[in-house]
Image 1 (cartoon, rainbow, N blue to C red):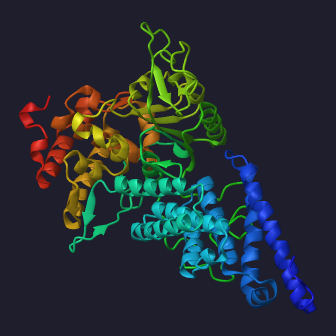
Image 2 (image 1 turned 90 degrees about the vertical axis):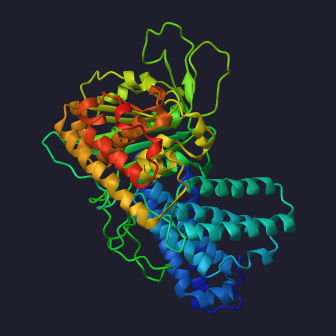
Image 3 (image 1 turned 120 degrees about the vertical axis):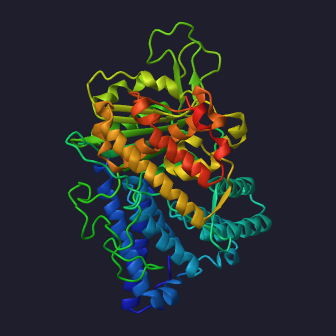
Length: 567
């Protein structure tokens, strides 16, 4: 405890109040890990209390910095630790709410730590645990910057982290130096995989593009009375064993997260400054004005709510699915996205389409390779049957995806399943660890198109011209979609911006791969259930012409079939 003898009454009160706030904040923060990860009402009140105490603590140390410096001996790394905890709070609140504005809040606190060099003297304290705090801060900051697409800063942070890891290992020769080297290798591999196709400025510097939904990228639609569903709950499962990952995000998960979020609006109630200023009211924090306190969600929610599961157990998948199912409001739809390795069946005469054809592995935990019974950590199509009681939209990216085409509609509710190709042409197989081609088409159709045609860089003026071809394709596909004889499930989902985007990008993927010479086999093309009409949509001449025009513009027409070859 700090010595109180040399303090007057006011100073003693300031130090005592600071110690109380600091202890209370630590207790609340440590309690966060015991909160359930699913559901909404169970954790919101606790988060609200934690935000409130950290807001008080942050303002208090700013208002009484001189007394705390001289009488308490407050060190800069301790201020950094408070800012880091607030950054973590905002990041975890983003994960729980899917609102990208909280990412900006996390960024502002993390950036303040670096800008004000709060951890700069951590190495001089001669305590290895302080250096570990600093390294963890860097890893967390990199994740936030990745999700906000601040790639120039990501590269700067990686270089700094590299130096700090070298200092840490040379000074302390710690037991965890191999783990920190692996963290560094993971993030470097992730950055490489994320830049399959580089868009270049006129001065040949790379440009970072966002692939979140914006008013400019929202596909047009001719609305009808059947389009009555909105995407409300999303479960993203990433368990592809060989895929690059960083901080429990595989590349496929990372891409789908952004695809299913709106671009944050800069003028949204609040302007983000570079560092947290005293008295600044953060965006929509529980306990603050503008947030509904009765356990309900904010009245204006920009994004559907997401759960992110990295290599989960099967029971985790089912619990989170059940939670999303339970939280669905009237006219709400649930999206399940699976990026997983196939779990294959050896049954010679399948009788039960729900379980005899295999499924996808949710995690790498296997209960013995040679057992004859069903695989414990395999999600089978049959496991999804109970969840078809509500509108369900399924995307399966796997080498055993097609087994999910047999899910019955027992309850008459809308049900759509989009399935990736089950195989990749030999020329593309060595790149599979960088993320799936099918998910790339759903995330950034033009990037996927360029990648299929071996284009690794493209000037920005070219990119923008090519993007206009893709936009025209999407507009035409949307028109054909609503006018062709598609199953009613599609029309009910089609009114939602995100689901419409996925469906039209699926159509683009199917048309491109159908015309591409390297993808001639049926196993190289995606499938959907219910089937979409071919003549009226998937093989419509106007869509094929737009794809071939795009190929001609990029001077890659030879990768695609000639008109007389198209079946």
